[in-house]
Length: 105
Image (tube, rainbow, N blue to C red; front, side):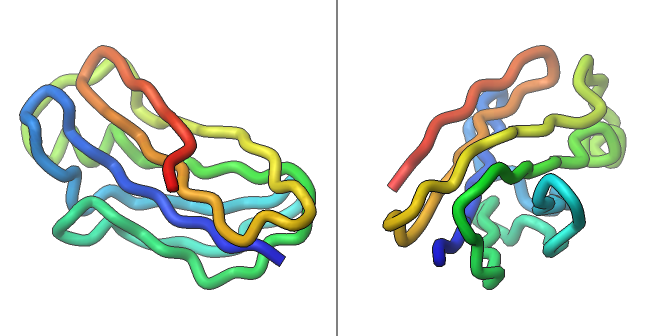
């Protein structure tokens, strides 16, 4: 089984993106919900079997709370968990009109 964490950084302001709601789902069901901490991080405790998963970030409400416009009201990242991998860290670099992601360590 594997675990998953995420880290969201506000690339436009150069700081962690604290307070973003994040949903972890499998193909069939929601597995866990959390909110990024003061450092923009979430570590999910769910054990992930090999297969496809999604992290969905509620970016629209987060930007609105800061009175900032965004083109992306939500960001969904689809990734695959493989057998034998202990942990997946999926990072999101976010700005109002773009985002990028990578698999961290």
